[in-house]
Image (cartoon, rainbow, N blue to C red; front, side, top):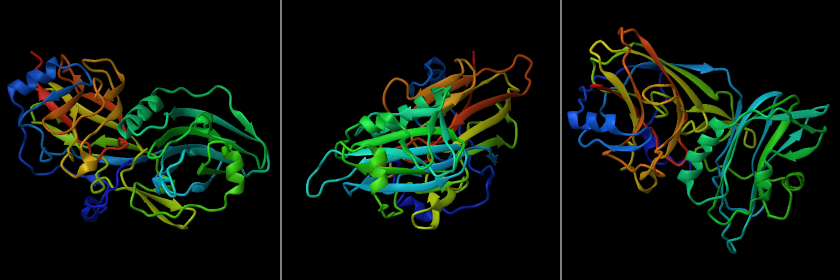
Amino acid sequence: MLFSFKKYLRFLTACTIIVGANDLKAQKISPQNAEALLKAKQGRIVELPGFLTEKIPSISYQTIVAPGPQYIISDDPEYIRVPEIIAIKEKVQPGSVRLYVYNVNGVKEPQKIERKITAVIKNTGPSNMTIRMLKYSSQKPTTNYFMAGKQGLADFFASQPEKKGRTVKPGEIIAIDEKLEKNKVKYDELVHGFYEFVIDQPAEISVLQTDPETAGPKAAARINTVASSRHTNAGRGLFGVSNYLVITKDTFDTKSEASAIILADGKDDPWIVGKDASTGELAKLAGNYGVMYQVEMKWKSSNGKGLALVTWNARSNNGQWCGGMANTMVVSRGKFKEGVIQLPSDQLRTKGAPEAILIQVFEPAKNGEVQTIRFTYSPPGASCLPTPLIFIPVSME
């Protein structure tokens, strides 16, 4: 699951989008832990005994809504219990669209049966519509939700735009992803698809469950019922915010102690709000899953130290669903080359403290000038949030 925030969401409240540094005591790293970080390979798990805590001071940042596509997520209901039904139906306008499909075959009455979970688009405009994929990520149905979320982001980041689009006639319905059309989904298996595409006519997008033998467009034409929403999972609906630009307010100096950027906590970084067309009500995306955070952080080294960037599963003690974390990010060049990195890279997931994952080590400029760290973060599916991004000054000698 993306993660049901049933308990700790009760005390998370939306606040200002400008985040301030806290007054917590500075967190020092031992020479042994620093040495372990410098010896580690990128993406690997590194044990940092006595260091990882949610009390590490936070770095102040400004969050700006950046240009981005119309955003649809289908995760409520996460488990589709009815054999044939629409999970979500939303209208979109010409332009770019991001669609995140995160649904599970939950049919168990009167018995567990194979299903098809697929996404379709209907041209509701007066002229032929062209749909062209910009980003594409599609995983096989699986009960390994961590793998789906982690690999889904990796494929999304690495994908390239299609050169040629598909033509859809007025009133015609087609499958968005032909792979979903071919999949047979067993009980409790997750269907995970993450797409970004551009269209030039108004359209209607649906995610539905049907029998494996029926084509998604045919099922969409005959199904009239949209599943009710329990509002206990991440959410569903159409959201206007899909991209954030995050800029740190101050230049971080390595003479300081370790500090963290905290994103997607639902408190200092509130959940985005949209609308669920089937209910006409406001929709809240608990977790901001599928939202892209482009982060820029200025830093300098006044003492010759470098800067290690790590993450960890800070909520590992919050019940049975929080026992692991797996993510994928895009990070700028440092000791290791820039690009997409799976976290962790040497195994499926990390558990909790003392395990950290090394994302990158940034080397100091020879003349001590200010540098800019850039990375792309998106809240990892199947993981509890937040997943702190900790910057640790380390001696490069």
